[in-house]
Image 1 (cartoon, helix red, strand yellow):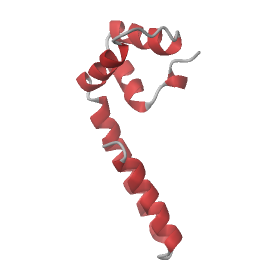
Image 2 (cartoon, helix red, strand yellow; image 1 turned 90 degrees about the vertical axis):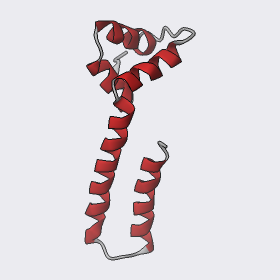
Image 3 (cartoon, one colour; image 1 turned 90 degrees about the horizontal axis):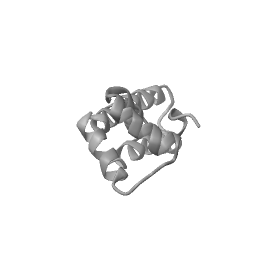
Length: 95
């Protein structure tokens, strides 16, 4: 199984920014599915250490703003507002 197939952006960033020991951890837990007690805490700690959660939220906000800007070509309507609300919900649910 491919590591990236099972990963979300915070994990991909932590894998890329980490050292070889960090990458071995991600390969073991995700690609090999060898998960042990304490792995979740270690994963969260590594994501925090490398700032991946903050960067992921920043990227979501950036792409969300682009998506809402793209909706500007459409006339105001309930459907357009619903799409804008979906973008906002997807970004805010991370908090």
